[in-house]
Image 1 (cartoon, rainbow, N blue to C red):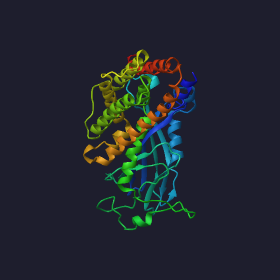
Image 2 (cartoon, helix red, strand yellow):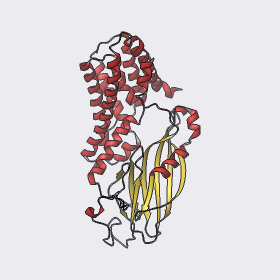
Image 3 (cartoon, one colour):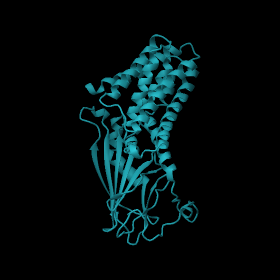
Image 4 (cartoon, rainbow, N blue to C red):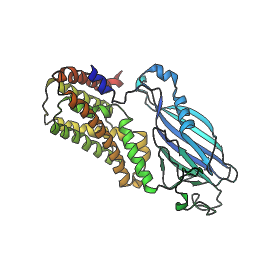
Length: 383
């Protein structure tokens, strides 16, 4: 039983109340009226413990993120926007209450300070995720989205009125040059406003892939862990992990270009596959040839789940403007998250496999536990 506790401790099942899992933000600026509106869509996931959910509501979680992590600044001066919060149900009506996901819409609004030239958004260093932002100035969207990482500033947005022309061109030519924007966090309180260029998008895509695995459904984490239940031999494990990663990378890459699986109950099928590979481990320790194509298909389903997350859709909503580097960064982030999970599981299982009681006290209980969860996901929507 101690082994079970050790393994569970590495899974993302820690108790928490409602928490924000992803954030996308559209910043609207009306330079003629001198107003701004920051429209943030936040996905909020509940805890498995209802008592904790009662302590912090989805609105409270969203407000805590908006007021505790997001800082609105004009000309490097922090603002205090008015905050308005509404809840939208993100799951369909057939989803059980325990699996419902809610999207909270947070609107932060206010007046652009008189004489202000530039807007910036700052994300607190303790933020658990990056924020994807699109700017719309005088009803014209910017040419590219921004991904703001924890502890970093967005690119500057000029908010001075324009009589005509591109609303994202600087009318007065007074924005600092790139070399003048660099370096800050000095004792004098200067701010780092350097434009991170392509690296901004690539880093955001990498962390989106990482968070898609570690912050998403438990199926994506339990699948690679379940591979260890059959055998801890190195070669069979490499084959199995490779099959999952190849399928996942293929599905994610195709989805980034707008080619995705449609019409299949992806989560239910993946849950059934998880149950099959876990229950098989109870009866023998041999890697059958049929297991590899099954795991390849499981990887494709895993990639399809990633392709349906809010962060992925925001990053790759327009396949015609999607860069190969962004897709590679997302795939790399997701695969690295899987490999980290595999390494942690390897440390635990290899250490325990040396004992005579390993299969009876570790493999069989875990196979039943994880396989049971797979069955729950496979038939959960039927009830």
